Length: 452
Image 1: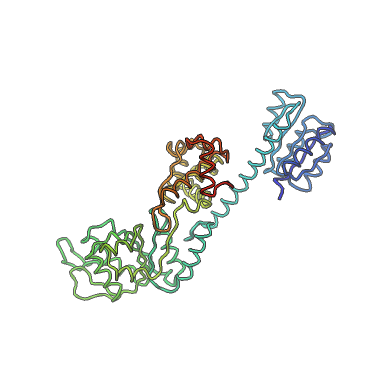
Image 2: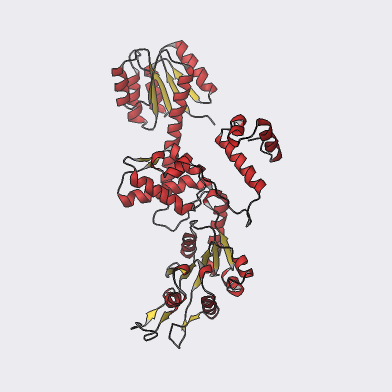
């Protein structure tokens, strides 16, 4: 595929021939003409990504071409070249929306660079528009925003088990969106018209959690002046989401196990159990099998809840989702704050995509919200990111397949990252790593990283 469509317009034959030759070597699909009138005819038929045109030409000049492009193809960028460079003509060109202004005699390297920058701006604009359009499709719906293959397979499984009514245990690091997955499961189940009720088990003491889940009868304790329905009864016919289930005390685990097995609840202070029809979805960021081994979590309760396990990968494992999620949060925050922020600068997005996000999706949302709050324009620039994010590349030690990575794995990953940051320059990478070039070569060979 070509790198972009380029229209070259210049009434000097040699200039046109040279520019056409150079730009074709750069991989662009090039149309060249020595006539401004012919250029207008081309622009009547199709759009180009970039128009590279001389300013001073007979009959139809570069400004007329620029005005035509702005009228017909507002996404096209125009680069003007002239041998009569004046401040007035430059101001006039920029006022009408020219991308850049190059004076003759020009250097071909300069033209290459300017055209490449214009093409990149076009690419980013289209990518941003596509992201916004995709995000718009999620508004008002329970959707998981992802284009990662592992996430798509996880969503397929979620939709597959949603109608079965089996209990589900959702695992993953904090901030990955476990409650959103629970809502997604409920939305695609036969219970979607009934309540979805959520509770954080780590936010209450044992007594308060029992009161919240099971309710109480009048007179059960001092201050219980009326009967109070618990969340299990409130979720009847629907789904109960138990977040941080591993924070539940042993005594509460026994009570919950009985409620799951018997499908009934006994309010605090009550004598008559109430029948309930509830689907249980639980979530945790802890290693439940390890807790079971240590006696910190009941094995029978784990078996009851873990009929199906959905493990959500960290955001660092699906970096391709960062732009899509960032624009989703941008749209949401801008609307809430009533600010006309619509873009994320390319440099900002590069920083976000390189970051490890130890706080996962929740951290990304906070970063974007901060950017929207402090920008005074329509774009989140690198200056609007937190200082530590701009100045440091924070890397975390994450578990791999349920275990901590070895020192060799950490070294390999770090060398790979430094090489990428150095643009593949092994001499520079060796300097950053503090080793000589030969030592780096040995490590690259050992870790099979020579092809990077």
